[in-house]
Amino acid sequence: MEMVSLVIAMLLTGIAGGVLAGLLGVGGGLVIVPMLEAALAFVGVEASVRMHIAVATSLATIIPTSISSARAHYRRQSIDFGLIRYWSPYIIVGAIAGTIIAANVEGSALAAVFAAVAFGAAIKMMLPLDEKSLAADVPRGLIGPVIPAGIGAVSTLMGIGGGTLSVPAMTLSSKTIHMAVGTSALFGLVIALPSTLGYVVAGWGHAELPFGSLGYVNLLGFALIAPATVLFAPLGAKIAHALSRRVLSLLFGFFLFAIALRMTFRALAW
Figure 1 (cartoon, rainbow, N blue to C red):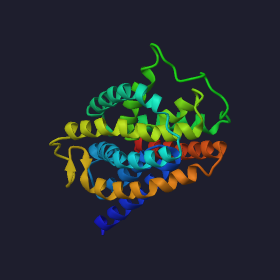
Figure 2: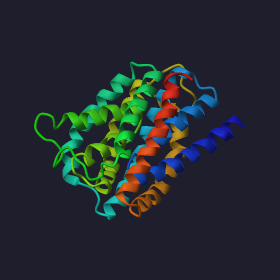
Figure 3: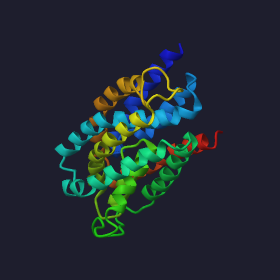
Figure 4: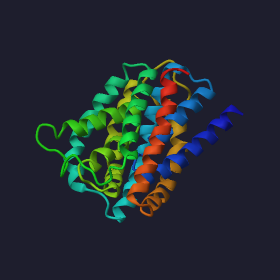
């Protein structure tokens, strides 16, 4: 019965993650990580590795989800390929650094990072700042690489596709919310590929890992969640383009706030 419940939870996680990937450009990880961590707790997986497994498996599922979501946004011409070329090398460096850090910290530390970043992003997106920006374009020069490298590192620690950070960063740099969401969908792939490999290496041979694990990546979770996210990501993209910028920003903000509360409880072991 526990295995049946786990399978159902993973499928529902994939559906929710796919819709939110297309709707918010978040790669689905903001849903997958807390739900999968809770499912792993339900079936008795050791607490010391639950968060690592949830983060790593989430990143693995983001690979196909990002491809599906990005294709849907590409058809609507809402991806900034110039920014993709500029940020991608720095994002990859940050993602590699993130996996190294994650391999050396406790699961509660990962949950705390998840909660803190989600709270900050939620506040930004919920405020009436749709027409506000800090810069006329994405920063270049010495500070230019810092932003994408930070997005790559923190997203890898959180198990997300980067939308939580890249969407606010782009909207503050005068990108429209729809362009930011579409571009962040493709950044999810740039983050997920190197970080997934990193988590496989980091967790290789760990004694507490459950059946079906490849390093910290759980193949059962990937097999169930990934197809559902791919199937439902286009639905989320369709919904996103039917909403106004203010409604989409508010929806993103409220969602992030709720997830941040959940992960705060996890970090404090409540």
